[in-house]
Length: 165
Image (cartoon, rainbow, N blue to C red; front, side, top):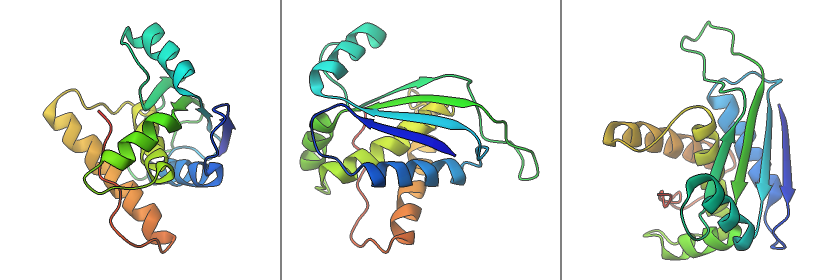
């Protein structure tokens, strides 16, 4: 799996954890190991510009996903996963820090960025949360992936509750 993490935000973030959880999520979703993903960490001003340009919504947001080849997980266990360019995930640590602090299970900015990375991966794979059934499926997968990754690393305490909108 080729995953690039580029921090342009000026904020120190745990880039290795972002890389590791993205790799874990893609493996759990059975995405071809030669697929490519880019994760870009930006400041609030850059995120606001993207949010206005692509979503026509004001203010910065937590995560945005820009799919390329519209890859999807294989439908059956024995299907060969397709290979390609997944696309870009853009994260904003300033928004992540605020959301983590305000979450019911308060957590760090880095924990929120890990959750948002998984959220972004799922969006790149075609998952959405506009409808209640879609939201239940996507947030269920998101929690399972984050919990699995944390368990593999022996991390204790509750996993971050979903704070993404």
